[in-house]
Amino acid sequence: MAKKVVATLKTGTGKQFAKVIRMVRSPKTNAYMFKEEVMPLESVQEYLKKK
Image (cartoon, rainbow, N blue to C red; front, side):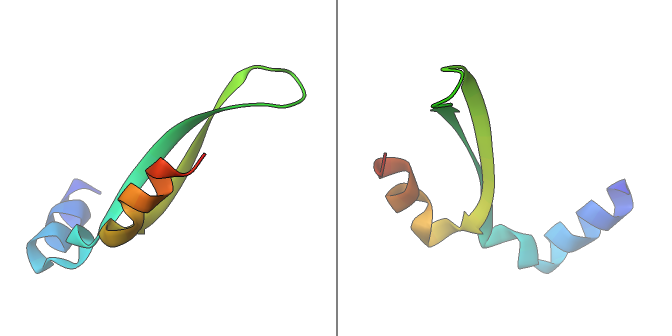
């Protein structure tokens, strides 16, 4: 599996996306959960600014 990851990074196709992990509070249990999303680099700052 490591060879596949290295091969995709060399082609440059994996550089336009970022994995964003955000901590949100559950309305039911009031506990924290982690929400993960993969998105283009251009929209990361906009996503982190919104609540």
